[in-house]
Image 1 (cartoon, rainbow, N blue to C red):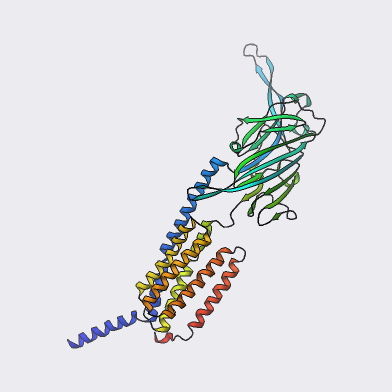
Image 2 (image 1 turned 180 degrees about the vertical axis):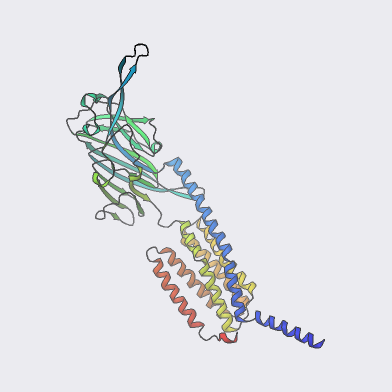
Length: 453
């Protein structure tokens, strides 16, 4: 009986001694690190949810202030007569007669020269609850000319053209936020634009009153439209030669669309930017005149989007992606200190440390929504570092080691913050930083005798 009890005690001591080994503790800490990925993923879901709410709030602001601006025009619309001959057979006499029916259809012509000059003289951020959206006021001056119109390419006979029913068409995506009178100066005629009920799922259509057109001379035009808009301004290059200039009081433009601005004249400063485009007809895959219905040319638009280089949720998302790294390195610091100094740290204490590190991200998100990301990062990081400092002093009973851990955490959070702020060099700086961290770990762990654990 005594031998059985002794054998059982030896087995229990063997089991107990294994869980006290460095290897077992390392395994448990590794498993805990993987388990903490679950709350980290929940934090990332929270960021996505808040970001979606911001998009909805931005759309709500845009629906009241003014949406994205896209301008296409002017376009000359000229009706013409077309005839259709139909054979009609008399059932009684069996004689065939020809019935001629006349219809009125439209020909559309794009400008020969088209110049857009845009001034964005006010950019602001409107609030909807805790969210903000970029809005602006702009003035778009449009000028150019139509040279002699070529009806032969469309197969239209001169005698069928209704020159006295010509009109001007302008298409836009932001009709409700236009803040100026819509008058086109066409060959010294003042033509008022009015809403046309033409069915177009992509644009609202404005059309002038009809006028008589001469095809002998160059026909000049100019008009100006004031817009309230949000986020972006885009144009469609209808002219054989289309030039565009955009000046805006904003320092973070994103040039978008089918054509890029001229690099030689593009200028971005700390307060504003200037950009130019020049597009000729051979640069774009559509014709200069059409009959019946205009094609959808929205895919050939170009322009600028006014952006925040990294908005609060993008920065929070980038920060959360480094969560696994922060938790892993922090656990590694505690583990090395535990191994070198022979101080015992329970797995429950590791769990508390890990949860504190996860709480950093929820603090960061909530504070960012009411202040800047930088301020929120400093507050959240400071709160977590102070909490872990006090906790380390209580469990390690060594202020010197606790302050070393605090300094290491402060350095780690500073390193992550620098990476988040960088764009072009984030990967380079991050790789160098991780290489140096690995070197430090190798240096401090070089004297540990793993064979006895």
